[in-house]
Each structure stands twice: as C-alpha cells, then as structure tokens.
Figure 1 (cartoon, helix red, strand yellow):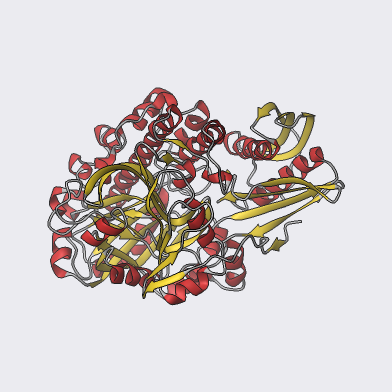
Figure 2 (cartoon, each protein chain N blue to C red):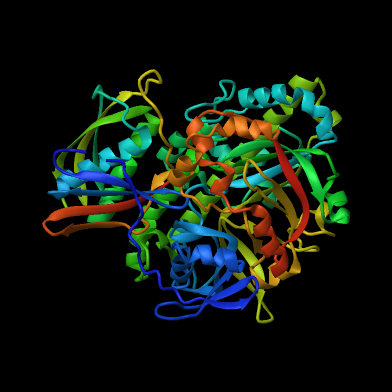
Length: 491
Length: 141
C-alpha cells in the first residue's frame, strides 16, 4: 500500500533528430499528421529521453487539422495527454479543440506587479510583510476570505466579465486591465454552460492562491539584461516586485472534467482516433467545441478575477505594513499572462493569414513588438512574458519576438519545468530544514503545509536560467530581467 | 490494502499515478477508491458518519472508473469529508450505483496529504489480467 513504483514504460523509442543547438525534430511516422518540434538543449534532451513527454508530443501530432508541428517549449515535461510545455494550433475548419490541451487549471497564469520601492528598504519589515500577505491572501486547503461571499448569480457575472468584474467591485484600478492578456476578459464566455458542480467547487475559491506549485512571491530585480525594455516595463535594479501564480481553482478543474466527458463521446461520434483518451476532442465547427470554448472562457475569466482580487489584497497588505497606499508605492500591474489556454488567433501560414485555435498547455503567449494584441504601453518592446523559476533561485521577465510569431504561433516557455517527481522531491527534502535553509539564503517562506514546501524544493525544477537561455537562443523570447525571491507564500 | 486487492502509487514527473489490482471488477473499484483516499488523506482514520448514494455512467468500463474516482474526489472536496467506506450496489459495464461514506474533516484527527485537481484519462487502463482485475490512472495534482 502506498509504495511508490516507477511507472510501466510505454513505447520509449521515439526517433529524435537534432536540427541545431536548441531544436529537435520528431519525424512524422505512423498516425502522425505532422512532425514534432522540441526546443531543448542537448542536456535537456538527454533527460527528456528518460520520460514520456516526447511520446506526448508525437501523440498530439496525430490530432486532426493540426497546423505546423506539434511543439514543445524547453520547460517540457511529462504531463497527461499533451506534454507540459506543449503548443499546437488547429485549423478553424478541419481542426479540433481538446480540453486536455488546455488542462484542468484553465488559465493558470502569472501576474507581475512593480513598485517604486527598493528591496533594501523593505528588508527590515520583510517578516511583517510576509505575515500580512499570508494572512490576507488565502492559501492552502479550504481557506477563503470571510469578507468575500458571492451568490451564484454574482459568480456567473465573474465568469462573464473576468478581471473587469473585480475592478467594478473596487478591487483594483481600471488601468490594471490594460496590462492583462485579453484585458482580463476572454470574450464569448457563457456561464450557463458551466455546471452547478463547477460553480459549487469554485465559488468559495475566488481570491485564493491554492496549493501545489501556486505561489505569491516578493522579489527584487537582481539583473537587467535589456535596459531599454526594462525602462518601458518600469523595472530598475534593486527594485521590489511581486509575482502571483495561480489559476481558476476548482471551478476550472471541474469545467475541464465535465468537458472531457463530453469530448470522449464526441471523439466517438466524429470518428476521431485517440492515441490517449486524455486527448479527446471535437471538431472546432461542432457544438461540443463551441460549448467547451464558451465554458473554458468562463473559467479563464474566473482565473483573471482571481489574480485581480489577490492583487488587491497584496496592495492592502503593503498598506497595512508600510502605511502607504498603492499609488504612493507605485504598486501597479506590469502584466498578467495565461499559460493554460486555447485561443482563437490569426497567424501567417505560407504567406496567408489563417484563423487558428492555438492550444498552450504550460506555454505562454509571446507576441512581438507592434502586434495589435500587445498592450499599447509595450508596443515598442513586445508583450511581456513572465517566467517563474523555483523558490530558491530566480524568475525571469522576457518579451515576445518576431521569431516566436514566425515559428511557434507567438508562444514560448512558461516556467522551469519539473525534473523530480513529487515523491522524489519529498525524498530529497527528507532530513533537510527546507524553510530554514531558504531563510539562510535570505528567502522567507510562509506555507500552509510543510509537504508542499518539500515537494516544491528548488532541486525539483530545472534551472530556469537554462530554459530561458534556450528560448533566447532559439529567438522565441528576449530576456529583460532576472528577479530573485525575498519572501514566498505557498499553499 | 484490502483483503480483496491492493494498490500502489506510481511516480510521475508532475503528478501521480495509482495502480490497483483485485479479484473482481467490483472490488477493483473499491480498492482504487481506497488508493485515492490514501493519496489524499494518508492513513487518517475515518468513520462512516455521512453517506451519499450516487449513480454514475460513462462511455466504457475504464471511463467509469475515472468518473467514480472523480466523484469521490469532489465529494471529499465539496462536503469536506474524509472517505471511509465504499459500497457498490450495482455495477454494469458503463454504469454503477454506490454509496460513499465518510467523516467530516477534523484537523485534529485527519491530515491532508495532497490535494488533487482531478483523476485523468491519461494512459488509463482497466482490464482483466491473469484472472484478476487491473487498473491504472493518473491524477493531476
């Protein structure tokens, strides 16, 4: 009982051909409709060959109507259905949408706040600030703010309006919305297509961080690589920033689960052969696909509202400890990105503009300078891309590039990517005072559960510096700044 | 462990797997449910003080196992219950009726070992092997 075993090895003989120092091709064979393209260094590829993520890249390539290769970003690791770090685009007429290509945590994403504060001036009160954040932002199982109670009718408004709902309720500023992907509202959400069970799972969880790899982090800008871009983003050396990583909580999980049941039936109905049931899908022209995308948009909007509420409580926490309001502290949103989503986008394919449904599963949109969906404030530098690392090392801020637009449907990595299973991480952490060791490095941790901290030890992740190095070398993102954690709030 | 079968957890880079074997398909569903409970709450002792009867259906026998396990997951999450017992009163290929029983979560007696988002269909297996039933599921954490 409960003994961990290595999983049975499935077909591990995936052909992989090196294209250059950061690109690998999985040639088309068998039921594949296109080839696979993996962004990774040679060292990363050596690790990847030991797990099942490459097979998942191959499986995604079998889905109908896929346009371009089945891709994986350098933070690729074994997921379920799609690999984590997977990107796949589908033709509007011939293609499909797959809820497994978005995942359970719909619109899991990252938001970065800037401030006018220098990290050094905060160090003396960092303890109090971490305590205030841990108190004001609910994290861990079952915790929620007692002063936020939503009726089901109000929750449905959240699904429709996203971050704009939160701003209307006084949680933040209208200007925040200009700095969120899709302005914090994915259009076309239909709350009536979100089940009662999803609403039941989610409505107490709005404005909560959750557990697992979700976090809230106070950081300092440790290095600037692109001064001009940093200036446009409002970043400077030694500056204090705050990152929020969370998603649509139980509501999103249930929307995904409900949709998978529908899509399993739809796959049979439309005669779609599946390499893995988790890839179940429906033609984009079908009612099943339309319903999923409308429910998914609702869950994505819930996630945007979630991060907006947490932003308000971060500002509240700073005010409680420092006695200065958000305007005085310059505590504003730099950007907020989704990394689990399917979106309608227009991309140039062989000289023609085509409307595609782009799935990003653990991947971030990275639109270039001048793109109409890049916020006006960042039009000259490209869309900000926020890449969290692990709680002991660093995170990165990048911007999108033309290279990403040409090669990856404007996508790049989303994080460091795990290398150790949770069990292996727990084993490695055994006998270590993880919180004490991080404190000695100047990183305070406040966590609802010790197990989460052990599972999330820095060694459980790839070095995110290696990941963004591959991204920059491949030209699918440009590094702007590195952020070092000062205090981490975990569920 | 039950008298009628056993389960074990499988390592996965980001998530976790659960493998179960039992002499009959009915027992397999109970063993898998116990495995999920162990994964969520460890060895927390629980008594059957709250019950819920459910009828579930799915496209095939394997999908029915996922539906069943997700039902238990959502029951424990929304009712804040530590599952204690599973009584399957009717099991068809694509449909089951069962009673789930458990105890309200009490932090002085119970431990949350892990939280889970959902039981997935990834590499899902439910089959009869050498005159016993075998199942494998992966759970998104």
